[in-house]
Length: 92
Length: 457
Image 1 (cartoon, rainbow over the protein chains, first blue to last red):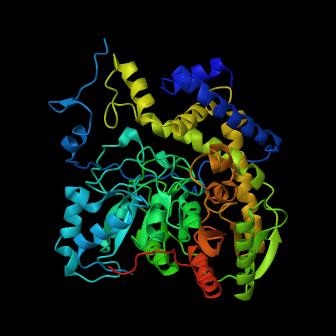
Image 2: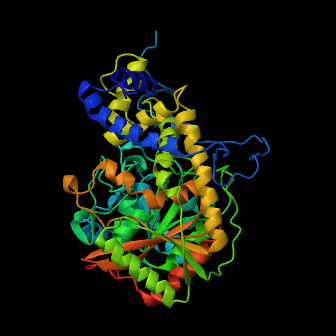
Image 3: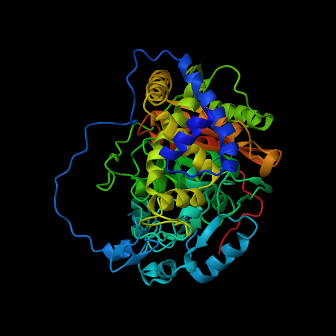
């Protein structure tokens, strides 16, 4: 992978990589991508893609209202919260 | 199976024994929720098959009130608000979580050395890895700390550490055990599995945790296939095994022959492409599943961030280890517009080809046997296998995940002091066929007991 591609991909993945990390990961990324190119040897023309091994029908259920009383428990797990809201740095 | 009467003395003795092995990240009595579990009066009030039986839980599977670290700094202090379905079913059957076991960060690795929180040693040889990613679970069972433990298997993560530690490791049919409460890594491939010291325990636990679950829309009811089997397929040609694994392989073939099974040689040409297809799919799914860790609702939040975007990027950079970042980067790349046909869609088509080949094999034979891993447990650090070599060595295990079929790693021999495992594979829903064959093989090749294994409490 070219350096430019790595930077674009890291941005899309919301990863901030230090220069030292970029160097370390670039070689490993390239090694794997080279290995992935092996897949081009396979003739896949008449094959449908498999998304799940055991797909039967679409899984549907009735949309019924349900009570969950663990709201506080969940908000409490946020690194910073106040009055039942999750606090984040100013966006504007 | 061991039934605990005095839980405090039990936990303190396994804590002591675990000092050299480090298989647990947290013991039940480290938390008030866990202490409640081991001191509850209900522990003694009813007698069931699994009542008062302790078990280990890989730390990417949720237990209420206990931590759920995934071996990552990202979730180091996260406490689970609920139980995974498999854990809830075991608790309802009377079994008790003894603690949470170490793993490669988010299940990504084959040694457990990718854990950001602890180094787990193989109880057979402390200088060696216990395998991964469910390495803590396998090491704890081998050392006799618990009779069984839950793990997760995305590309071999239950079977490979079971093989390295000389115990049984079951990867069930995809969807047969609910994934509710498993921290998602590669959703189309992974399944909750069982590591245990006997076939009987593996079977009993499987029968408790299986079944359709309303909380997991990909779960399915188990429709048992015939347990009868007469023939076992093996791969023809050179397998590229270490001398130890080759020796175990030969013993297993001879053992199955002596048990009355016919051995049929087959070819699986797609096995050569399984690794590339598997890692393409797993990394793509991982990049999507791990997008949720952004430092906002839970998990690590960077202390030095200025503004929201900076907070997300810094939290992820500080919270994830190298292997996780590598997989997120590759997964993001193969899903980028313009590359999908070349990588992701092609990998899914190869997945179909792998399934088709297994269909053909199971048209000729009732079971298939392959080595679980090409080597026995390797050493910690640079003298072992590097990360890329470890991925290539997943060749035999990823096939079952791509095809969704069940597979059981069986301890078949000890070579030069290290256990060697072979995996049996079966068509979907034919877990009972695996157990029956493993029972028969155990009469020919009784599993060796790890030196120093704890017995009785």
